[in-house]
Image (cartoon, rainbow, N blue to C red):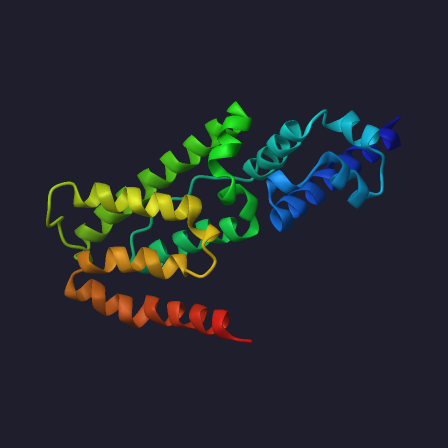
Length: 209
């Protein structure tokens, strides 16, 4: 009995891994349950034993990722904020389907919708507190027009949710281009010494044949 349970568990994990890979490569709408079963070399009936329909399967793929999710601590430095953005965008790059079909997935599954709201609210709080920390450390100025920080936060959240869909744009560089005008002279100096080299390295890697 134990070996049978392990076999079913292993197959379930393989299904989730294969589905995620196909969703990333082809897009959620272009992948059918038949495509997934063919990729796995199993029957559609065997696949639907574990997941009755594609909506159930994509929900399980998202939930499997969310098991490992932990809300990060708000960074206190520009380098820490940059690392926070890199982790968020790294998740985007590993789960292209999630960003590409962000709104659609929220309608496919209420549980996915709740996860999306939770993660975005967490990210909003983290970046807002990080900006407050940076102002205290004389790295950022106060807002120069009414609601400037709020608009900046909303722009960054949009880039973090959908940014990787436009592959031609370096989303990390785009985010920093929005933040840079609010940096103090000390903040800009840190940016040029610590952040800019990372952005140049990313650009060089992207341009490499």
